[in-house]
View 1 (cartoon, helix red, strand yellow):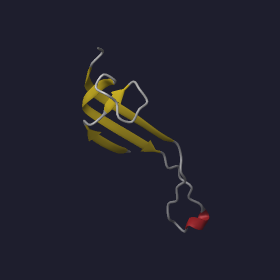
View 2: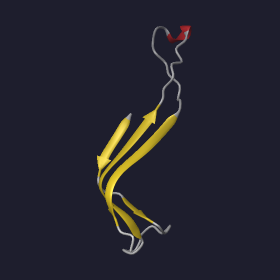
View 3: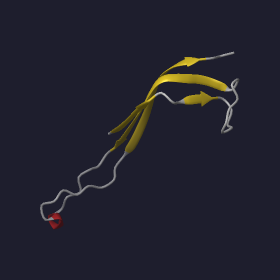
Length: 71
């Protein structure tokens, strides 16, 4: 699992790339992105004793603490 910690996340309502101050909804004070990638075992007799894996399910989760502005 990979995990990235930071505080530079801004969420806004409009779909523009550079929101105005009135479109910004949440300013985070803390943010964590967690990414998980399952690697199921795929070892066979042809592996010569070495572990082999295939790509499995992937998931992600974002957790934030922040300040909101609903004006």
